[in-house]
Length: 166
Image 1 (cartoon, rainbow, N blue to C red):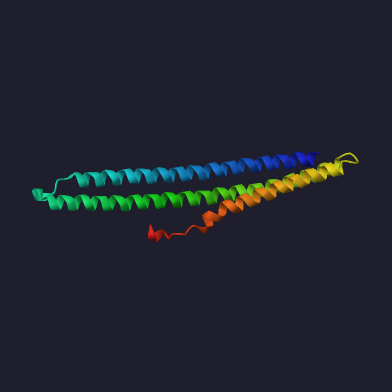
Image 2: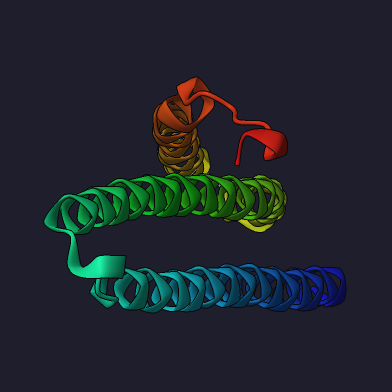
């Protein structure tokens, strides 16, 4: 039983480390998102100020051209912002999935070891019950693995953009 307690303590320590890793990834993503938002706010204010300036000489053609140029720049910046948000969310999802998947794999192994230990110390005649528990746990792990694969497919299918294209 002492060995099982050590295994449980190790599993708890691993869970704390996984939570720490998830929190770090989330904070890093939040920081990047805030930087994107501040950059968008700065550029929007700059673009608005540029568009608000009167055209030199008061020519209406130049004023319309200036407005069209501002609209085009605004649309380009909005598209760039949305691409950056998409990239950030895809990267963050991949990092979180990696941490969660590795932790679930470790947890699955630990639970299987615990179930094996319980089966050895279980009273006679409880083999069928332990088999059902193991089967149910294996089914749950398999369903989770399929769910993770299905969730990762859209992110993997998304086109990878080079940093130069940004």
